Figure (cartoon, helix red, strand yellow):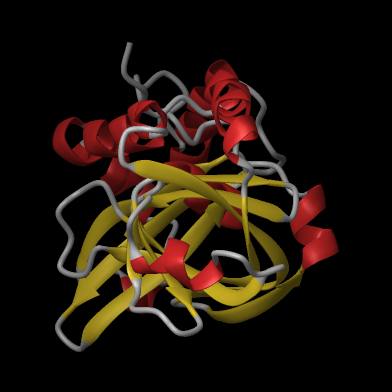
Amino acid sequence: MIQTACRRGGSAILAVEGADTTPIDVIHLFESQAFVLVPTDGEAMAAICGTEGTPAMLEVTDWAPIDLRERVRSVVWLNGTLHEVPRDLERDLAIEIAGEHPDDGLLDIGHGASMLRLQVDSAVLASSSGATSVSAAELADAQPDPFWECEAGWLEHLDADHADLVGQLARKLPTDLRQGRVRPLGLDRFGIRFRIEGLDGDSDVRLPFPRPVTDVFELSRALRNLAGCPFLNSMPD
């Protein structure tokens, strides 16, 4: 989930020892290294200039793509040591990153933006189910969910156009969670998550697939089968 949250790039801030926090728009997490763009003349650059690395923390907030009462799905904290990226390597790294994770912000390198590298020592993922600590080795082995680029559109489609499917899936939820408004919260290879907006607060619950899915066809079929409606169209064209 950490790799996926960083790919979505909802919103993030960089906290560097001895400097004010810096909003971050571009994050690329490669194994246990996070590459970020900061203003060239900003405090983050000034704080690490001439050092061999400075303690820093990157906070990433994962927002739901639909209009929920509370849109935060999870928060990630990446802790480690922040390093400068040599100027002569910035553009080559940007091209390499763009090949895997395109972002228009990469075009700002050399035009008011510079790249920094956070060597991650540890990570924490916090969601409604609690907080989990993740080691740098575990983070390095993780991969983003294969549907991370399409998830937002699918959730918006389910929420706006498929109240029938959401209703069928809601019948699978525990009885005490059916009293509030059921909204799609997340969709990945392992299942679908819902946010139940009740009178006494919100609750998140996951309906897992029998097995992880690998492509859009399997995902659509798994959703229909989970709902008990194998012939219902569940995914957008």
